[in-house]
Image (cartoon, rainbow, N blue to C red; front, side):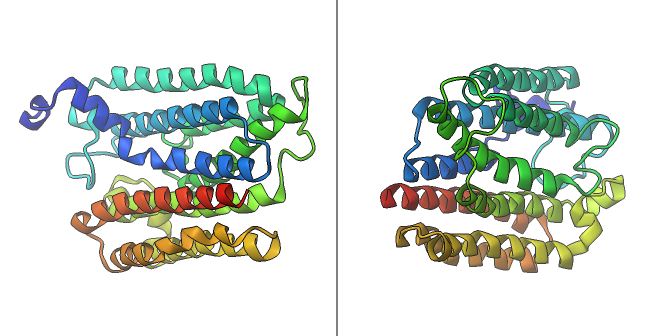
Length: 315
């Protein structure tokens, strides 16, 4: 263990491992889904809270899985850019990180019991798929994050599924008396799917910045993220495309789905998005991209909060 590792307390090490700065990735989509539920008159506080807690547990579990598997597979090293990896740095024993990962996913399953009682078989299938994918992101015989599929995983599960699932469990709690085995009518709407694409784009950009920062180190370690496949130019194009999606979708909801003008509230974050984008388009060093990573997370939080607020006020 290094001297720096010895100076870090156990509590601090667990905070580093949990990566609380990534929690907007789990909270933001739930806010959007809940705002839509209020807008459509199906808001239910208990399912909304369960969706939030479950999403946060999945996020922390995925963080721990990534930290553990990248260390034991030799992807991380002392020269890896970015934030400290607790397993690789010796801050926590690998078996403890793995146990904490299992505990997070286990608690998510406990929360899932209530969500399944409300949402039935459809939400159980989606929830189990999310847990399996969270582990498979860094582990298993074909790690998603190391084979160019990490961006798709984040877009689908921390974007589309999180928003639509949050809306679904609230709508389903009021749609039927019995536990549903199929998707009840009106619980998965076109509006929810379209709205989900906005936070999906920005949450994926959090990973894009992370992978652009780590591109050279990942390439040397044999970790083939999508950024390694696309290179700097392609990854930057992906970042801009995801942002364009996030800012176009509120306009689509306003123009094509009859939402109130208030749904355009997220557009006030455009200047901040432009500042962060300029950094991503021009820099490759961690001194610039670490702040850009945090700012993309803040952009996600601000955009999604305003999105949810606009739909709630329009209700």
